[in-house]
Length: 287
Image (cartoon, rainbow, N blue to C red; front, side, top):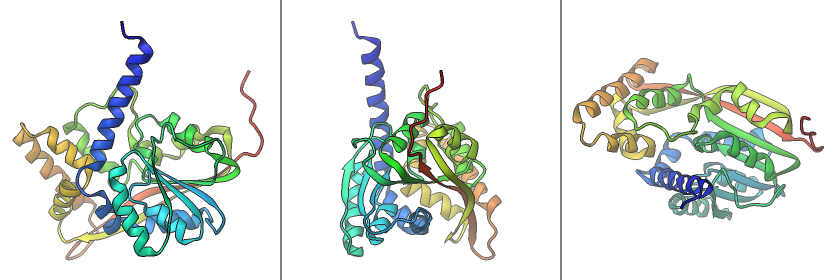
């Protein structure tokens, strides 16, 4: 007879295997290089990463943040559940003339010691861990007392948050206990996750301007080709061509609705930038 604990562990392993496979679909390193390079620089600068810092980039993907931190002189570990993304990251690091460590790791159970890092960062990465509280607990755990934590997360109201809202009716139901990724882009949610374990918290909503696409349909086709979550939704619709066609129309309409360009498609993607310091003293547990 299988124990309840064993069943839960098996289910979690299966869930993480699906997540790993999803992010290996398409070409996320291409998307990060085409659309997101400034976010890595933004997060590294916001957290004051400098020479001598020991830095962890959680859910690092192909190292958009990690490479920038290494360029600032830090000693960097890039960790991700999907090591298939690391080859592109290593090539980018080599091209930039920096060296860093790449480690496979689950954001909800990081393979690092308590307080091992001076700075713990995640740029539109940890937000995709299905269980938000364990992921937040790990960010705090591996940061040293007095160290810094920095996060960039897409907001629910912003373009990527609305992309996920658009895809949701077409996607398989989420697993029990999983929370929507864009909740990390809500100040109240992420502050509750981190709790009293951090201080000196700053939050700011900013925009990433994306002008990579000529037409709304070009955005849709690009995401269908390179972005794992979008590819996974379309694969789930393989036997439902009418629903796939309906999603085609909705994704193009999303870009059209939020387009402020003239002659090309220009869309502002809203994100939440959060920085915080891990408390030096231990916060007493409530009695």
